[in-house]
Length: 364
Ligand code: 13P
Ligand code: SF4
Image (tube, rainbow, N blue to C red; front, top):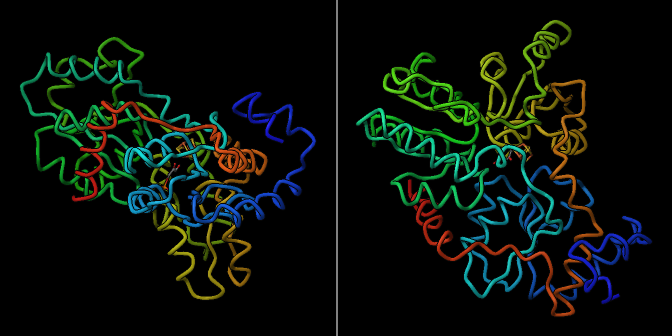
């Protein structure tokens, strides 16, 4: 079996014969065998056949906090690339973080590169003397985390966005928030920033598509990025639910657009959504605007509540979906054979400044 580890990082061809069901049986055995060496972290959007193996389940904030406390030599991160990078930054050099499928990225994180953000930073500085505080959503590459660390800013997750953005708004004259325009807009609005005090910076356009005056006047500059999964929830879905099931509570993730969040009854991180649904009395009814694997899991867990997805279409995160039992098995096997694959290793210089930003976040 070791041959599969020498062929490719994702040994597709050599594992072709292995069904998910067989891989699950093998994972149970290997996990038991490697229990002192390996710990598994799993994000709420993972599929059931993966999340069942997670020693720690959580939203982005919780998993970052969990990673920071671990001492096991190997951490297998069942989630997406930026989450594994965060875990690598928060753990020691002796520990190794493994992502079962290296192609498990995040389309939102891909919408802001370090070059684009640096350009925006210089464009903004060229037209204003205001103090600009840069804040990045944790869904971004490590180099952007380092950028905010170097430039007096910090990082937020959907759980702590209100606290972090409020800190940034008090610290400077302007906030530059990337990559998710929706989390930025929804949170700033909740904190009292008016819509006409926010502008959207599109790196594909000259000067972000903004005039000098627009940049000078803005309190908040939002990067144009978004989550393609949460973009699938629309105002019409809420109107539909209000008409057909008026007793249903609509709860959505703050990566949804402004009109959806405004029309919903509540919004919050994946951990918040889980908590609210669990706390609700038996017989409650929810339409949830977040990734379908989590919605389906809540539905199974609470048959005494009516739980549906806010959208009639499958809002599935295809990159989270890439983590399959085969790849988890291959990762565990590689550890057993002392030839670990798919190691996520952030450049030490980048990690140093990203760690400053993450620690700043954890103390806010
Ligand atoms: P949470 O931090 O709420 O788990 O969100 C992470 C994410 O990627 C949502 O799309
Ligand atoms: Fe990225 Fe959206 Fe998937 Fe979250 S759901 S990991 S933001 S693409």
